[in-house]
Image 1 (cartoon, rainbow, N blue to C red):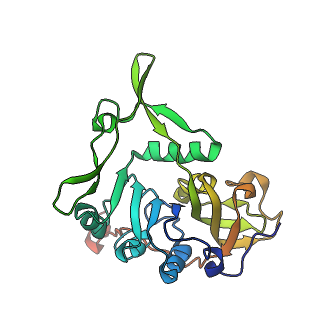
Image 2 (cartoon, one colour; image 1 turned 135 degrees about the horizontal axis):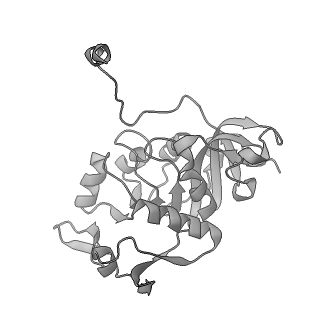
Amino acid sequence: MDKVVASADHAVADIPDGATLAVGGFGLCGIPSTLIATLVRSGTGDLRVVSNNCGVDDWGLGLLLGLGRISRMTSSYVGENKEFARRYLSGELEVELTPQGTLAERLRAGGAGIPAFYTPAGAGTQVEEGGLPWRYAADGSIAVASPPKEVREFGGVRHLMEEAITTDFALVRATVADRHGNCAFHAAARNFNPLCATAARTTVVEAERIVEPGELPPDAVHLPGVYVDRVVAADPRDKRIERRTVRTPQAQEEK
């Protein structure tokens, strides 16, 4: 089955207001920037997004956030986005912060059909007890708080029950995809993209290179096409460096 669609607009046309989205990427590495930009143009709002982070103020998911189109974020790291902090502290955004490994496993469990699992991460903290502010009220009080988590002991160690994550749609970016939807990812872009893809009911992939079936060796496939519903071409130059670091000429000479 050929899963390549003509345009990114067509690929995300059925994402409605209020949809849940799993969005791949790690920092700005491997984010589906083409599909995000298309959602910006579409006007879709009230999105409930699961992603490792929320981009930066002027790129990635930060573009949707700045327009007020994201109502809830489930993330593990949000420190590069000042607008994110402002919206959260003012009560405009609901935020569920989740340890990075726990977030990855919740997505993996969702894709595998496992409803919940136990982890020692967060045991003995307010994560276990509940009461963490998910959303603030305008007066600074807590409008929505995290619930307490179920606890069990395994081998004498306390573990918290974490529920799996599934979403309506996933937006991911692959380095290479074939027309059947089989995908390969490069380096750190592989961290969350495959997990997001498997956790969604409808998965849309933007690929920097689209090849014919059979051109992608089976051993190179990181995400089988059975999890992918649509593939669209992405501009391979459409990338940004999250935090550019360079040596000064003096430092180079001293070295």
